[in-house]
Amino acid sequence: MFSEDAVCRQCGLAPYILRYWQMHFPELRGEAQGYKTTFSANDIALVWRIKKLLYIDRLSMQEAQERLRAEQCFPVCDPGRAGLGPRIASTQTMRVELSETEEKKAQSFAEQEKEQEKQRLEAKRLERIERVRRVISELKELKSQLS
Image 1: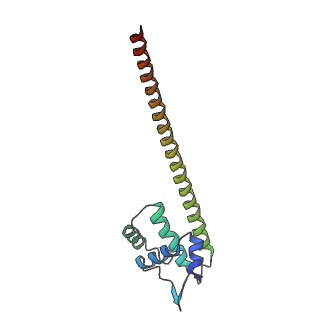
Image 2: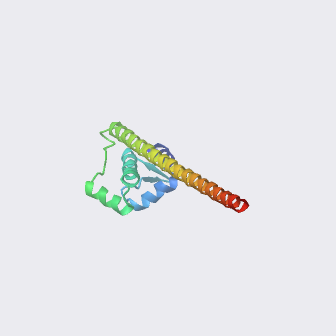
């Protein structure tokens, strides 16, 4: 059994997000033990699945709920028989997928920033060229007046 903090650390979530998901995904309830809630390996695998549906597949909460119900993916592993193997493989796969997605998003964002910076610099360059042309035009006009 895992504490809320352990689940959040392992899955890379803020505790308030986990609690919010608990309200919207009835399958993710955990077991209340006094004031604390503990989670099983199935719950952790479910958290990873929800995270993938919401953050990678970019589904809404309702779409994610419907997808989970349609897949009937509960329980993900039987903690009594399967041990930690399926959970570990599942969480490692999810971590790799999430880190690759985050890396792609970061690269995409960096490329967009770079492109915007290029456009901004090009606009400044064109503005300077226009100012120089105006100054040259004014100088030519002054020269013609003096001649």
